[in-house]
Image 1: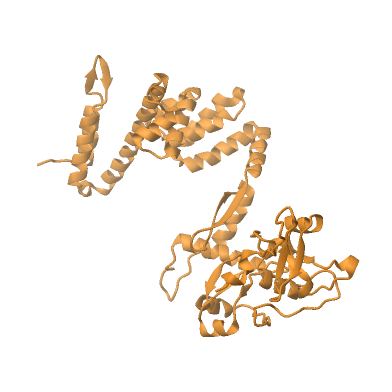
Image 2: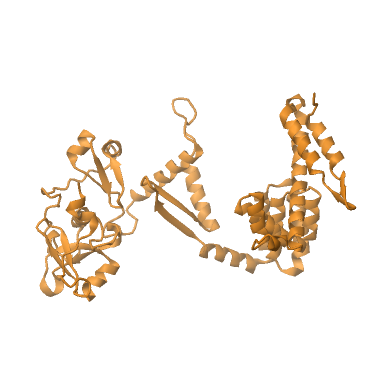
Length: 436
């Protein structure tokens, strides 16, 4: 029967570390290491260790992991030196690692980056090869040293190595930023400016209509977002029990809470002619009976049950519609469409009314079909339509015409070079044939 506990594993690894020789070259006995680890996992007897022994075992295993990382990096460097990736038809050593070791592209990139960077930080490489620091620590140090003036590089590396064994890679990264700021203030400022330029935020909808987003924010702005989200995402006990929400759910709820607070203020800029607001449209009897669904300005749908839940704390704005679901006329003697008329236009046109355009109401302008200045065209529903900025220019500069059909919706008559017969066209979102 096999006998294998934590210390047996460590002792076994020490014995077989350099036991295999081929052609005078000392090699790791990979088969023996694999067999020993498999035996240990099969027995699963670490519970026999005392608490202190268990902790010591975990610490030692991490050292061995660091050493194994060093061996991986060293082997990858040798593979690159001998052109193994070229021989196997790979573009780079990272491609070889990813395709032949079946590791993630991010991990392959991390290892190949260490292959490239470690020769420039020999003391860091020695610490990694001694198992004192991890590959993540080494990557942080190498990145800092690449970006400090050469005359202070040795001193900076020494300072980082002195504290690295006591810090997590993330904590070491913060120390690296302080070192960079101390020895190269101008360079650190350039890094901050680059971070600002790299900011991004992207929103998309998945197949269920849920909002999915990703991006990155500069350190200061990101810190403000973190502070705000942490403040509103704390666990909230329910009935004396722990908060049942996962951390991800708490932060999602916190973000929605922040948006709700922001939209309740009067300081937000005008968007699409009115202050930002969520407008959901549906028939009142559907809402009361919890049947069918409503829709938002951004083409999202929601069930009547969910909308009833939300409407408990919302302002309901009645809009009278005719039999064709067209809002009734809002006659006005002013040029700019007032908020009630903007809402009516958004309800009718669903956004830019130009055929084929998908811009939502918030990104549109209210256009007078019969010009307000030249022809004193009225500011009302029967003389206005929503157009995005691009199509607003198209209508004013090209030979398109807008007419209102019997159902009160705008039709667009194209110029002859678009359609020789000049048949009326309509945006697919408001085509009656598709409203069923």
